[in-house]
Structures are given as C-alpha cells and as structure tokens.
Length: 162
Image (cartoon, rainbow, N blue to C red; front, side):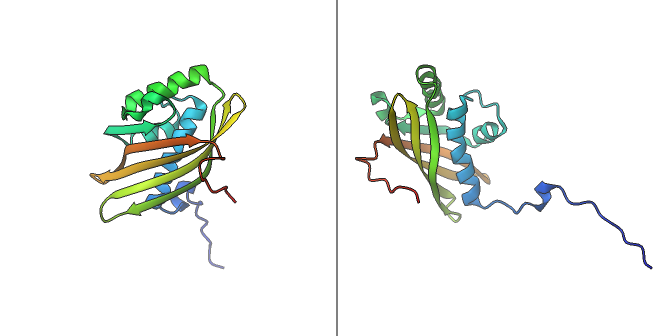
C-alpha cells in the first residue's frame, strides 16, 4: 500500500480570498465608527492602525455635528473634535446600518456611503449619513474627503434597513 503524506492545513489567511477594492474600502470606512465607539483616538487597535495608514495627508472633513463644522477640518482637527465630544458625551455609539460603495478602478476614485444610527446622547436617537471619498495613489487607496450629516428619522428621508 502506498504511503500517504498528510500536509498541514494552510493558515486561515492563506485560504482567505483576496479582498475586493469595495470590500477593502468599506472595511476601512467602517473602522471610523469603531474608533469613535471605542474612543481609540490614539489609533492603537489593529483596525485603527490600518485606517490611519490610509488617510491622505491633505484629508478634509465636513461634519454637521456642530455649527463650526460647516468649515472643512483637517484630519487632526476632526480627531480632536471626536476626542472632545467623547469627553462630554462618552456614551455616544454609532451603529452601522448600511454600507455601499461606488468604485472606479480605471480612474482610481471611489465613494463609500454609510448609514448609521447614533445612540447615547441623552434620550435622542439620530440617523447619520457619511460620504467618504477615496483615491488611489501609488497603488494605495487613501481617504481624502469625508462629509457627515445627522438628523432624526422624521426629517431625513432615510430608508429603514430591512
């Protein structure tokens, strides 16, 4: 009887299929909510470290959380605002309801759309929509612009998940 050689199973990362660009950008984009929820503003978790490696040096954000947010903020200013908000509303949590992306591999541009529910601000529940713009530079996708809008379900026109 011929001998049978048993080979070890490949490690899980070797079996995993290559992530599509849409999957990569959606995963990186959703890491922002994790950073905020975990108050990881020093970017110490693995997902936060990966996210920070994909932030363009000229990244700008525009969020309507506060009146002054009508102006574009640098990434550093945005993180500072998240950190400050966490001090006075530490229970705020973002729950990702839906995520979708539009990727153009030819032009190296993509947009990720996220709809979230925001809890933890007294007895208020808000809906949030984020529009994250990505560009590919030297083979790496970089987040360069983010817009965030908040509102109640009564006046936003959001489509309930399901």
